[in-house]
Length: 341
Image (cartoon, rainbow, N blue to C red; front, side, top):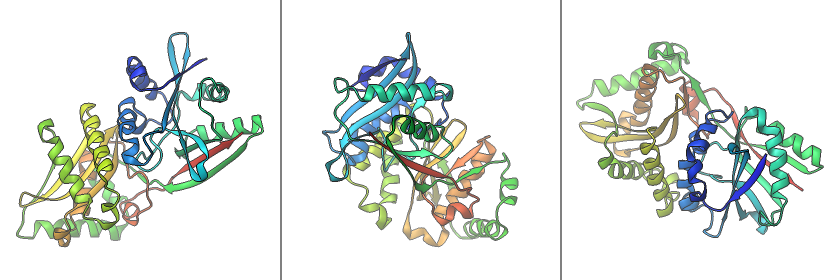
């Protein structure tokens, strides 16, 4: 493999199709590893999570003219001013990250990559390879450990968060029958509460691009009603969400959905329909409608829609909130791996 470093996404633009095609063959086939998403993430450095002076270190591996591996990295200082290389997308707003390489090529790719990263003429000086948000089923976890052991480097792997998901049977009634009886009755009770009220419930996806910006802002405004999210939603973070919505819309995998009461927005979810899965990215709801449990009702509509449209898996992504397990979430985890020469 021949390794090359690129300082901008634009320098790799001619390989965009090859990048996304390679992703389809990887173990971690997630929307956060597409060329378009990571390019958008870099524009705001993850909604302001990282400073502007962070330096892009995109490493691509080739066999002849064929792109066979990508390490989307960037260089920044972390705790105590230690210079580190991290995944582009780290840490807060990109739920799952990884290397982009076929499993059969992973070991030689990582070996050659680390050799390349040690060349001071190619990569800025670093003390730590700090890789977050790797799914527990990713072969990168064991391969990174093996590479560290081979070199005599310090290796540490720690769990970060739970990331529950639901395998979907393709039939909503069958899905309901598979969850806890008490929860099943609670879902039906909340649906009846809307049906038997004097207001009319509605459910829709945003499908018109000329409405996308306004609808995304409405979604953000709902998120901001949660005190725990209001401080998080800085101007840079709001721009990140707008950029992400636009990228997902342009690529055909945005599922920005709203639940309405008498035509008024009561709850919203930003999800991605990607790789025949529905990835729930974030949510918000109008607190004045809390008696109707609009967040739960919208989630129920989404699960019904997903079952009816052949979605294989509903991914709650990061976070171990109780409601995810009440809806049938199966636990799994993401990890942070560090390698120190």
